[in-house]
Length: 313
Length: 313
Image (cartoon, rainbow over all chains, first blue to last red):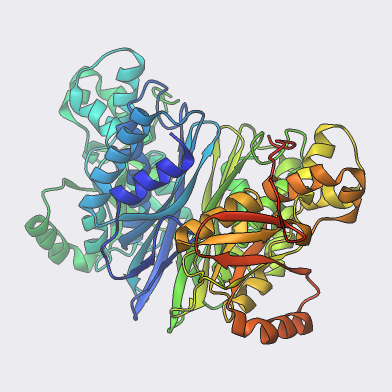
C-alpha cells in the first residue's frame, strides 16, 4: 500500500461526523473547535515491537493497544477523549497488516467516541505513536499531585494479569486465556476515569506496575502510603498457580492499564455506592495515604516486597 | 540517562511560564486552556534515521528538524504554534546525544514561542514523533482545498537546496555550505504562514518536492496549474554546477519546508507590497491555477519535466 492509500483507508474508517471537527485527515493539520468552558487534555504514548508487544503479535492487538494506552492516560486525567492523531511507522505497508491494525484501533476508539483526524505514516522501524486529545470541564482535571494524608487508595480491575499473559505467550502457553487477553487487549477505564473526576483527589494509570506508579503518585503528592498486599486484586487462576509470583506480578508487572487513585475518607461511602450502581468494573480498596515512607502490609503485618522480575520484556 | 531524568531535563528546558498551560510534562497528560474565538490546529510528524536524516547526523539537527517539520505544517495552516508533545524513541539514552537534541529543539521552538508540555520517551529504534498544537482565529485556517482558477501560485525561499545538501553529505562534500544548512536546519515559515492566512486561498508546505506537493494541492482543490520553470527560486550555487539537475531538484527534491500557496489575482498588489514590508524571506511568483492538467513552461514554451531521481534517501 502507498502512503496515500493508507491515509485514505484511515480517513474512510474514521470519517468524522461530529460537528466539532472542522478539518480531518488529508491536509497539513487538523482543525477542531473546543467547547467553551472546557480545557484541552493531551496525551501522547508510543508503542513498539519488543518493548510493548511481541514480534508475532496480530496487528489488531497492536491497533487496540495503541488506542488503549492513550485512553488509559486520558482516563487517569478524568477527561473525555475526543480526537486522535496517529503516527504509524512500518518497514513495509502490507495491506492485510494495516487493515487489521485499523480494525483493532477502530473497534476500541468507536466505543469511546474517539476519531482519528490526522497524523502521518512513514517507512521505518515498526512503531506506533498516538496522540489523543480530550476535554475536561474547567479546573476539573485530576493529577498525580493532590493525594492527602488519610486518603484511601483504590485500584480498578485486576493487577498482574497482563504480565502473566506476557509470560504465558513467551512460554508458548495459551491458558489461562483471560490473562493473555488482558495483555493483548487491555481495557482502558475511560468512563470510570470521567466518573472519578468528581471524587478522586489524585489519580494515575498503572502502566509500569502498581509499585512503580503508586510511588510516582506519592512522590508527586509529597506523601507516603501503606499498601495492603492481601487486598490486591489478583485473578484466582494466577493465585492458584503460584501465589508469591502472583503478588510479585501484581506489584511489579506492567501493562495493566488500570487506574490507581485516592479518595478522601469523607467521600468514601457516597463514592463506593455510586460506583457500584454505575459500574461492574472491580473496585478494590488497597491502602491509605500516609505522611511519608512506602509501607507494605499483609493482614496488618509488615511485608517485604520482592520484585522477582518474573515478567518483563 | 533514565527515562525520568530525560523527562526532568525536558521539563526544566521548556518550563512553561505561559498562563494557558495548566499542567505540563510529568503527569499522565497535559492540560491547556484554549482562548475563546480560536480553533485548535494539530499536526503530527515523525522523523527517523535513514528516511529523514543520515545516521551520522548531529542530534541538535535532529531536534531542530523534528520541530521544523511540524512548525512547517502549522505554518501551512496559517496557525500560531503553541504547545508540543514529544515521543522520543532511542536505543540508548546517551546523555550528550539527548542534551544536544533538546538544545536543537529548544533553539527553534523558543523562537516561535513553542513549549514542549508532554510526551514520552521509550527504548526502541531511533525515531522522533512530535505533535504540535496551535491556534487560529475561528474559520481562518488555510487548507489545500480552496485554490481557484486564475489564482497566482507563489513559493517562499529556495527550492531543491535541501535535496542538494543531502546529496553533498552523501558524497562526503561540504560545499556549498548553505545547501547543507538548508538540509540540516530547515527554516519553517511560521510568521509568513500566519500573515498568509489573510491572503492565501490555499496553501501547502513543500516537504516532498514542489511537483508532488503542488499536485496534491491542485487535486484537493480540483484544479490544474501552469508552472513557470524559469521562475523557480534556485540557489545560484546550484545553477552554476548543473542547471538541469538544479531544476530537477527544485521540482522533485524533498525537505525544503517552504510554503506553496495561491493568491487571488485581485489581492496581488496589496499582498506583495505588505509582504516586502514585513519579510526579507524570498517570495517567488511561479505560476497560475488553471482549470485542469499540470503544465510546465519555460519562458512561455512547453517544458518536459524530468525526475532525475538525483537525490533521495
